[in-house]
Image (cartoon, rainbow, N blue to C red; front, side, top):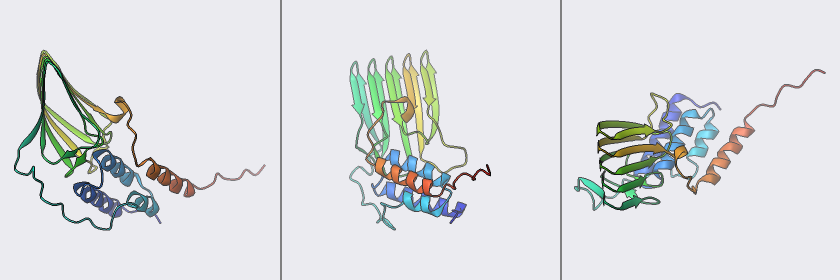
Length: 211
């Protein structure tokens, strides 16, 4: 059965709920959202939701609520945050003659948006995000550089959003996508193989030659 636009949007909403409940990482949310929008059949949409409950309970209040921003600071050194971690508030990164690396691909995000302030003074701030998200970058660079190198989703799709306010003074602030960074081992590779198998079953055979 072919999938409708309304069914695709309903699946995307369920993915957002699963992300808020901590069932999907930011990378999983971005990739499954992309797959949902590209799904041609209901079977493909069912595969996207196959390991998620029908409805998720409302998330419990976080102890971090009320705290405006979580900071990662490096002064003449190096600060890294990668792997499994939770983003439940706004983020801040400051590099003063040092380096800050924030990898958001395996983070659990309590919502569909991440807000981040990045400040670089003769340093380097690098933010790694999953390809397929929407990156909004604003700010000022003086004798420095701020740029985005991410394979973003098509315009008009309701994908996760990264909003970055960047201020660079003789430093660099970069937001790069998954394809530009070192690969990570995702626990949902089996799910992707299952989806490919579903698609293969629905591909019609080539026409038989008359000769």
